[in-house]
Image (cartoon, rainbow, N blue to C red; front, side, top):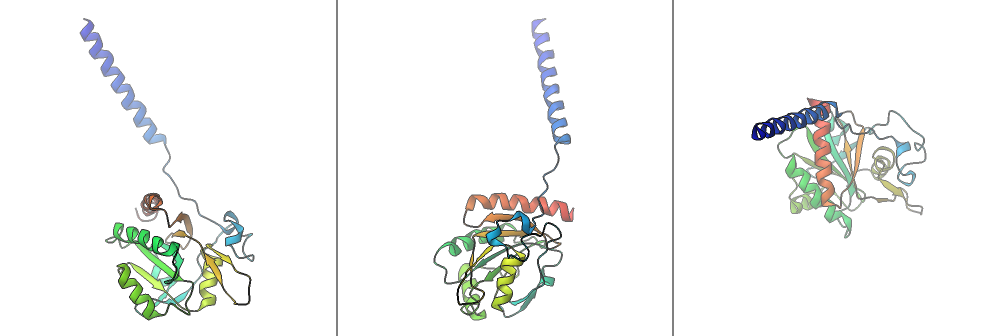
Amino acid sequence: MLKKYWLFATSMIIISLITVISFYIVLTPEKKLPIYQPSMVKFQLVDSTIQHVKRFHKIDDFSLVNQNNEIITNETYDGKIYIADFFFTTCPGICPIMKENMIVLQDEFINDDHVLLLSHTVTPEIDSVQVLKKYSQDKGIIDSKWNMVTGDKKQIYNLARKSYLVAEDIEGPRQYDMIHTENFVLIDSKRRIRGFYDGTDIDVMDNLISDIKILKKEEFE
């Protein structure tokens, strides 16, 4: 009799746990990524002309040249999720680490046509197409997945400060100088910022990969 009661009690406990877990799964809302606006970002990283903007911020149109001397525009990324960053090839500090972590993303999404990568040099006067090509080959960058772009310095400056919101201005005699940050920026298929991530932290790449999958589900499923 006691054994029978014990079996019944155990069964009821298991059923109750399954019911509670099922309700929790059903009632827990799916994670949604925020849509970042200039007013939500550290003001030092945002151009003064847009620091007040609270709605409708998007990445501006652009036209730059990649490591294969191909014109890369915003249309190249239309309908795609992509991760953007800023760097320069002679950077001795954070850039090599950022590139290694971007390689992790490249490998993770190598067969996923929905996800692309985009790196902008902040020293276009040094980082020519030829320099970027050698750098990309040395780093193991796959051209079909990842564009490294150079071009007009003013345009790159404005993209960093007015679109991606990831660079500090430098006051000085040289126009359009800036200090790029370690941030990777997650952009959705509508050219909106959905996240900022420390590109020097390998552990943060797991968070970014998870958020990309959440964004893919939101946009493509």
